[in-house]
Image (cartoon, rainbow, N blue to C red; front, side, top):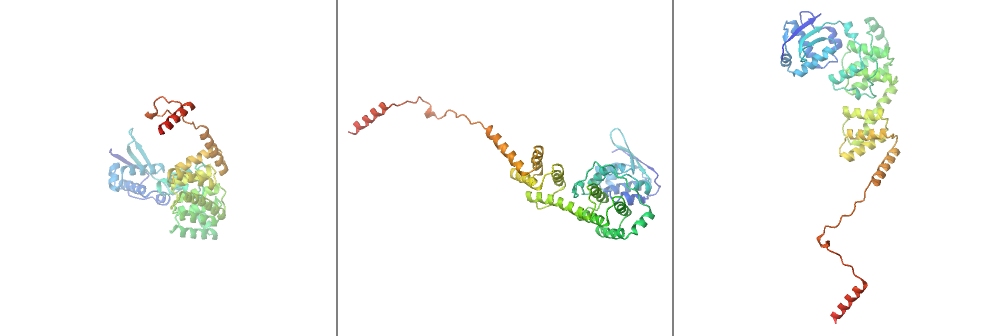
Length: 366
């Protein structure tokens, strides 16, 4: 691999990890990405300015592809500026300095949230109780000042909600957690009960990523879910959809990520009821002898295009299909027998012939 010159802008000549990096970027980043960024900081701090992708990979016991992926991630978040040659090889890396204010003022886009969640953890937006619509406008959150934080956290409701959230997360709240909770309360107008249930719901699915929690909250706000009761109803509804598919396919596990995307599509895009979805699953199982989500999706897509809204419509389509097969059925023409014993001229007998034969037989007997 070619040598890469490492440059820096706004970074001290010692290995310093900015607080803003720890507070705002590190919590939501993949651990391998954090290792790469910290190693780059150290290289600059020790004047080790001639490095290569392979040398970094060897030092961190990682693949070269992992190193490049990490650099692309930090470039996307404006912590690095990367120069590449005509062959797309990295030739220079610039470390960009930043302040707490700059880090927190970065606009959070719903699409970026989904990418981050998908790449940095096992979370996926498709796993939330209601679908995440990625075509929403970018969301900009204000940063609450220390005075505002003190003012709001003196509120008994917020104070109690934060205490419960700490219990759910099983750790002390970080600055970004506090900023998110205040955003939910002040701007999305979530009650303390709804905030607590939001964290309870996400943590129960092992999803503690703040970006994931915020994405779920934004979806609930868009869907008009503004009370704990409505949120519980929404989550129960989706759990019922998942359970009906599990039962139809005989699964003894929760649906996987792609399988959940299929179920969400059947419910939200096709707007099919559970009994129609179950029917498609049953037919798929009979046809393929396995829980084939892709095959079930083809069946449901066909029904959707045919305007099916209930099982009676399915029965009509089945009847039309059966009639079409009968109408188009061709009766095969019998082929001449290939039996060699039938391949000679056949004689015909009259009544007189039978009478003469009978007389001859009687005379022989006498």
